[in-house]
Image (tube, rainbow, N blue to C red; front, side, top):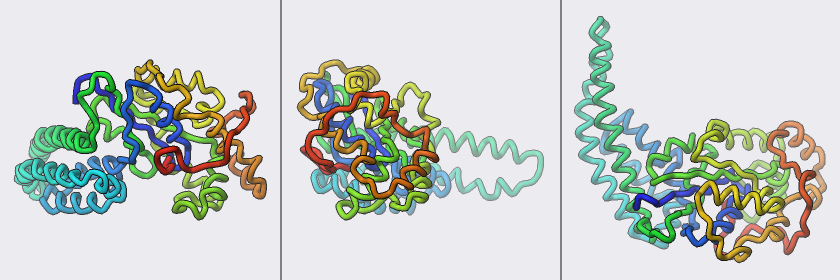
Length: 342
């Protein structure tokens, strides 16, 4: 990638409105958008950081084979391969580059078991030698090879990583949090990474999933209020440690609707973009307004709403501080281009 390329991940917590921010960024000249989700890069089961941990525990070709097989069955990658089948070739190139690294490191790894059984004053020296060797060989090379793999996949997907005019690459769910671990672990695999995390008033998330999405998409959000709260907090368990980072911006879906100008400026300043040449062409506050204030739409479970207000107070959006706008259209889960996976 070029030195000036910025990789921006727009990330939600499932049905929290992150696609609205992608719609907004479509309106900026400097941005090139890849809409399909690419969270397989950071997935807890098949992602790059997971592979790094597995190779640390067992540096073997079997681990690489399992990584490739699991990734090839990952639904996000499968969806991408339907459009760009050459991604599979990128994956095998990655494996081939890692293979000599793993074989080389394995020779150091094989010393580990007998050394840790030595119980005398020299064990610390051996342990130090092993640890330093592991760091120098496995960690350093793995990160660079993995970064090359990401660049290779981007090229296959048609992302122009050398563009001077469109130097901001916007990716959907690339730093997904949820149960995938701390997404900051994966920042090092991307060029100049920036992460935007989009949350939504939990009352609306609950009602939206419980009533509107039911039967339309697979149910990933519990419709029992107590289970919902547990799931809600689990999905956000890593976000608090990220909020003070310079490369992370936390936003609310509702900000973009009820305080559009300020929210837009905050995002543009964070990324470093200025040319909003298609204002209003992709993002409509009035249309997105249909998916907020759902307590006025779904009125059959006031007790559940009260429980959410009591237990998730810090996550509520202060609707009372903003002037309401008239909604246009109906509640939706699709945009003009893709299914809503926010």
